[in-house]
Image 1 (tube, one colour):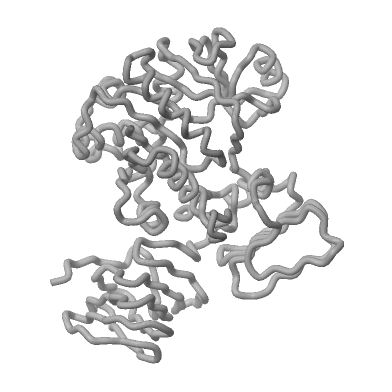
Image 2 (spheres, one colour):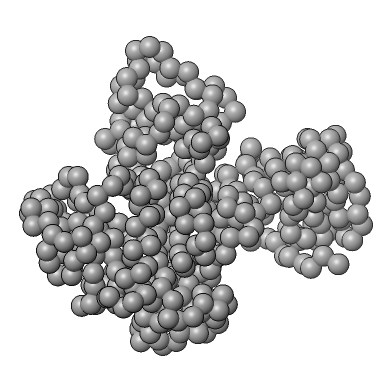
Length: 437
């Protein structure tokens, strides 16, 4: 089975835990069987591996999310990265071409597309096999999963099947209706569109050729910036007449807001949190290294991270995005393929960052033209390479790099350091990468 996990989004509805790099699917807030915290993408990927161990999984994502994908899922996971953000049609066309041209998947094989962030149980993934079989034998050009709705939601698209059979022909789509229309659709037997669908690879390649002018991976990648930003539903699904939908009646949650996210949390607090006995229906997530105390609160969500602090009534938390859109702030925390960093302090001509490197990992060999840097090793052991000279480092060591100096650090164990950047013009764009000889 070929599965494309679609990972996108800017993460603004779950601020301050999410940002342009760390979207909601990367927030480690759910406990796994061992009691460790995992993210939505880690949970979905783990469930796929448990239910469908032979599935070939490719993550389709934006370039900015690739380091976090590798950090959370490992270096071995296949990733098809957009050079810039467009929308789901271009992303899936590129992913289909990647499967055919890079992974050498035959165009007669079925491919199933699934978002990375549904909160579901194993029965959801068991349904993938039936969808794949229908697509492979050309029972329809597109095979969709329809979620049995539990209330007339205005947040989801709707699929109206022709009858009440387990597999039905689709006769209508309705994108995010008002409450009255949603209720009328439910009475007709409409299903929520959960964004899961299957097709033969040749179908998507033909859609790419027809709408984008090419089905070749390299051509699509090179011209990607010029492609139209349009959703797969608008470009393809709403115009396709040969569609079947399978009904799914199991548990399904879209954790797109703080209100819905807290419903899936197994505990009321994560991090260094204390609440007194008069708190009711309060959920707190604290990523800061300081204690957080709540007293006498009801129906409230509190979240604290390096990006900011949110204190909100749970119902009102759904309307956070316009306020976050007006904020102009640098990224304060991010996961990378080699570890993570957290901004500690920002001054007019300096910035202090705490960096954690995973064992065996290293930064890129790079230089900066407009700033000096100082590394102070806090813990662990590793090696620095500065202008080609290698030197072992451990806790207490200090390494200074002048502007223009090529440098990197390699971690033999988990290695933590404080990086102080000094200069009048500190920018993420002031970085030149080099091959390490």
